[in-house]
Structures are given as C-alpha cells and as structure tokens.
Length: 217
Image (cartoon, rainbow, N blue to C red):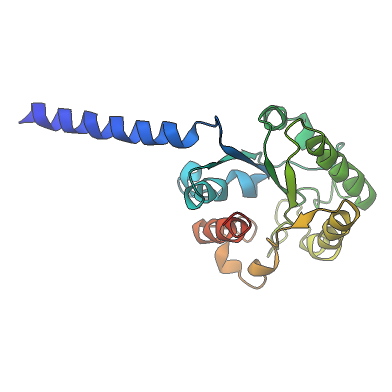
C-alpha cells in the first residue's frame, strides 16, 4: 500500500513541477517586471512568495504573461538614501530581464526623515524610469504611487507620502507621458488592508493585484 502512495505522491509532484515550469518559462511570454520596495516584495505577508501581489497577478493573468517580483525591502528611488534601489543586485537583474512592461512603485522609504528630499526624489525617480525606457525591449512603464501609510513607523512620514509624494508621481507621469495605476486611493481609510499600518496584508495584496490586472485583461 505504501508503495502506491509514494507513486501517487511522485506523480502529483511531477505534474505540479511541469505546470510551474511551463508557467514560468519566459520564452515567448509577455514579461512584466514589478519594481518596488517591501510592499512589492511582500514583507509581513504569510507565505510571502505565494501571496505577494506580483505572484497573485501572475495567477490572474493569461498564461501568455509572466510576472516577476523585483521588490527589495527598504529600497528607495533617491540615489543617496540609506538603501538606493539602483545599488541592489535585484535592480540589475530587472534590467537584464528585458521586460515588456514595468510596474514601478517606490517612494515609501524615500519619505523617511533621513531620506526625504523632494527635488532629489523627482530627479532620481525619473532617472530610473529613463533607464527602463532605454532598454532594448522598450517596455511600457506604469507608475504606481505608494499606498497610504496609517502610522509613521520606521521614520516613514505618512504626511509626506500623501502631500508630496503623490503629487510628484503624478507630475512625473505627466511630464514623461506615462500612465498611472492608482494603487493609493483604493487603500484610503482602509487600514484593515494592512498588516502593520504600512504593508498590505493578504487581502491588501490581492486588491493590489486586482487593480493592476485591469490594465492587462
């Protein structure tokens, strides 16, 4: 009896691996790169790899799409911040990925008291956009404003996100002729969609994925 159980487990595992491999084989797929900080990475989520918004998005979209998570916890757009995204290996991997679409959501960590500088944020954020724009794959870029903060933790300034970051992201989108995915307003007054008043919980990650998916369905 044990023999048949082991055979059954082996067969099921083989099927799961085959499906996963087909789904994540990027040849001839439309590549979506999710660029961001811990909100993109999926910090504070249970079973982060499965429940981060990029992976949920990957499951929602047609199999012709493949979504890759290039989020880095603590990452900032500002080049002289305490953790610039452009200094991370993940950033270099995202460029090498040659995406067809880029979803860019940075700013939460830039708002920290030790990092915030409006002029620098704008110039460095635009420099990141230009880097992706100049890739051989010529990706379409969507800007995603940070979700609201409901408590000023880890030096994150919620008022800066609301009153300075949001307007400047929209301003940049206008200047660079880019589309916005509104990842902010659906979270307003909905702290219940966060795990710690900063990071989305599982329900929040599902909402983010649903919002983004509307651009591709």
